[in-house]
Length: 272
Image (cartoon, rainbow, N blue to C red; front, side):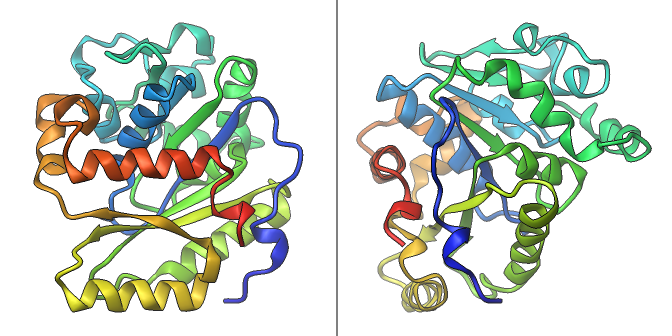
């Protein structure tokens, strides 16, 4: 699928920069990226909102929020029209907040189907927060579901995590087709923030082959930062912490700090 210049150029961003983190494949590092990029931006004192759009709620638990103790979540904003300000929860980082999710969101998928303008519910919900946060990160489920469509419609840019494993590029054309449809019909300003290589193992030839293929196809849209396979990154969620709070000296933590710096410098959209 051919990408055009307008797919990665962006002008006049509003105060809050909204990044949708999506790939319909599971296990590619979407939630890991959402949680740890959010933490890295917060450490840089950029006020950041992590929006958990996945019914599994892994981003919510990944920042130390007990889903069982949260009385209201994204479902209540989308379906019951609760005020978004009342749904936002604090984390251990002063500049990082989260709009939590839980299994209720599965019901939201069903309930939204019959609604007019069902693709814009998340956009409408987040609008009152536009001036409050420097960044909003939308963590999507591993599917091109209505929740993902809502996230793409609400976002300014799409960040695509791409794991450095066999078949990494398989199915990516489906995501890009969805991106094009959303851009054409629902969100003309949507552009690609960048492609993030995850689970990169410099000792593994396959990782380098995937990186080469990604750079051949996406060219300068591939982030310079590569997220390594890292034990600390895998351990941190079980402690309910971003890796920066678990082991800031780890390669995983340092990689997400580097990614945050790239994002703050305009992402790959400014270099493509």
